Amino acid sequence: MVVDPQAPELVDSDFVAMMHASHLCVLIHDAATKDILWANPAACSLLEWSVTELRPLKANHMSSSAQQYDRVIGRAWLQEAVEKGMSRIEWHYRSRSGRVIPTDAIAVRVELAQGPAVMVQFRDVEREQRVEHELRQTTSYVDALARHTSTVAFMLDSAGAIRFATDTALAHLGLSGDTEPPVGRLLESYARLRRDGTPITWAEAAEAADPVAPVRLEVPGTEPVTLEGGLERLRDVDAFLMILHDVSTRVRGEERRELELRHENYLARYTAMGDMAMAIAHELGQPLAAAANFLAGVRAHAQALESSGRVPAGTTGHLEYGLDSAHRQIDRVSAIVGALRSFVGHLEHVEQVVDLNAVIDECLYFVRLRAEAAGVEVDVWLSEEPVPVRCERVLTGQVVLNLCFNAIDEMAEAGSADPRIELVTEVRPEGGTVTVADRGRGVRKDLFAESFTSKEHGSGIGLALSYRIINRQHGSTWCEPREAGGSIFGFSLPLA
Image 1 (cartoon, rainbow, N blue to C red):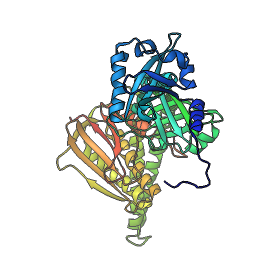
Image 2: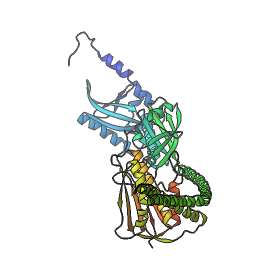
Image 3: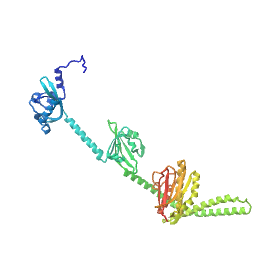
């Protein structure tokens, strides 16, 4: 040890002065008899005895009456210090007024001028024990809050990382007790933050918490969970408390009511379309018949001109091709109008036995016409065997056209590197099926369940009408993501 030569040398009286000034209680016991030889003022004050009054006292006079503080145990503790140099114990002293004082006591062997002694240093730990008890109690309360409450609570740091979460909160995030705790991970990695229906970042949510701001948490999944509550900035702590409650049922109810409202709106439009379809079907019948007669007259006149030699032979060939195409379109419109009149005018559907392969063949001319204009290839895979189903032929064809036209439009809008649709017929356990697959952006939900158009100039009844046509014929419709990307729309009808 290096001693500063200029440092003042301490004398015995200095050590006595320091011992008297110390707040640590000190008792000096004789090493052999264990009698008290001396006590500093801190010990006298705590025990409420003077040094003169302390000297004749024994352990039973100044210790707790509990069995673990028996005089024999006390002497053994002091003797251990004599033999080993030091011994430590938690000892309960008793003051003159009867107050039991828990202490942390250390007994040390010291060599005095008059012989060996034991110096006991102790301090009152009652307050520390009380604080420790309160901490344990608080810890148990926090543990109860974390594990046994239904409250959804998060403690977050300034970066939005989770520092504490109740078990209920973890369950809503899809985390069980076996999952690695998310402490230190960003809340945004598990859920989306929203306010007033608009997505927000954690930084925006934290900035708005002054000191409290409303917040909504949306946890994605098969059944999305919606939590709603408040985010509070804690005072004097760089942390935030988020208290939420589950409003998933309410949100799903609101979405259901909104969907029902949209369905009511659709039904009103559907009814109007039905009335309009009846009016159109009634009014178009005569013009269509007249147009067909005019086309027949033009064809006959052209043939007469060619027969008389007034026009070169073969000139009418191109004209007849155009007339035939126009006539075929008029026939198609006439059939559709007739079928619509029957469909809208009668609740019962007309049962016909139709081969779905034949329906596809009839529709291909119009499908390829639309696809060619959009630069889309059409692959057709018809069942090798007939697919006989019970349905109304023309209206079922309209469903095929609607699905194909939607797929072609999707390919044109998506800008696919390989714009192609696949049209397939087959027999499945549920009946004869038709599927139309595209390679577009895909679907995230069943569009037949919410069959309202998103097109700027759409009428809103394309898929809805297709659904109604198939459903009224005891069939079913569906849409799903395609494994290689894109979507698959399809329907099935009962086999004949």
